[in-house]
Image (cartoon, rainbow, N blue to C red; front, top):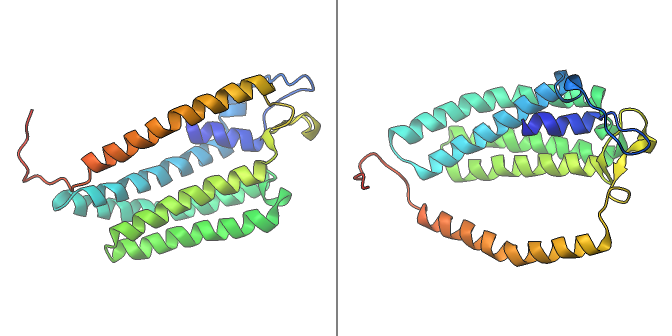
Length: 209
């Protein structure tokens, strides 16, 4: 659903001059958003399977690697289709083509490299390239949107931007303080959880409760 909703924003929503949105079902669920949702699902599934190969061994790792190769072969044409439909349905390749086109090429390079490395059983490098592919994809889409937050399908003069959709100064200050205060705890928890699950999982280890 995240991919469906985000690609709907890229395509544009019916936002009027008063910044009110009157969206129906087809504004959220349409051909473009379904393709975008499928692309996000496939890429996240692929990244998760590569992570499984890093954290398991034996038969489970082999099965995850084989399934990952199949998913990657599906992901590449899905990405190509998504790019093609994006050219037709959105303006992300016309607003900043100097940035978005090279980044799109870089995304394809990341996943082609991941496929080659996966076949060589270089799981760590494969994980790095699939992660880079996701990060570059997100960066490319937000770069194409900037400074817009939501696109109006009625008129671009009604687009929500970081200027007209921003909260007040006091709200932004409070949110910044809260975010900066909680960030160390979030990072600490992530580091701790990664440390706890740093070893590979195998079927030979005894199960304890």
